[in-house]
Image (cartoon, rainbow, N blue to C red; front, side):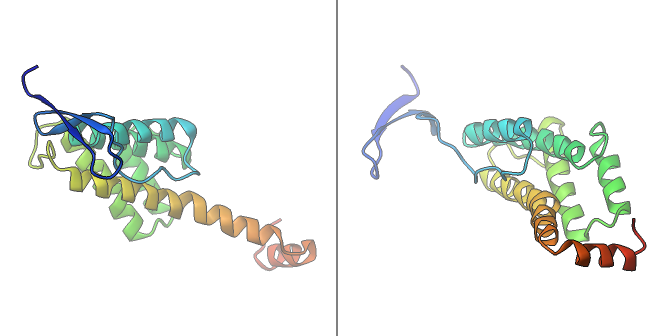
Length: 170
């Protein structure tokens, strides 16, 4: 079969099948595991992006953009227009570094499916950074608040009531 070749992995001694310069079997996952606090449908899209990142960085970037859109919905935004969702999050006090991370995933993902100045067809390094950014956003927006809330919930009820009274909250 033209363009295909077989090699052996030097680490596990397993078989690799290549099509030109891309491993087609076994399926190589790229990028870190998804943040556990992402909704299951986001994790599924994220895992799909991991499964194609080596073969199609552009496809993976587009899927990560979809993950970002769904993450905006998980964060209470409509999830229809990522740019508007990010603007709404900024108005609620979103830190600048997280806003920029959101915009990086948004813009690179957009460029993956629309012709433009950025061409990531063979740019696995940029896609790897997108995986990390999406997880960092989820950690900052989901995981850390959950951890802080769990710690606050461990305070005695009297202390929590006094804090609520101090802050003018019922």
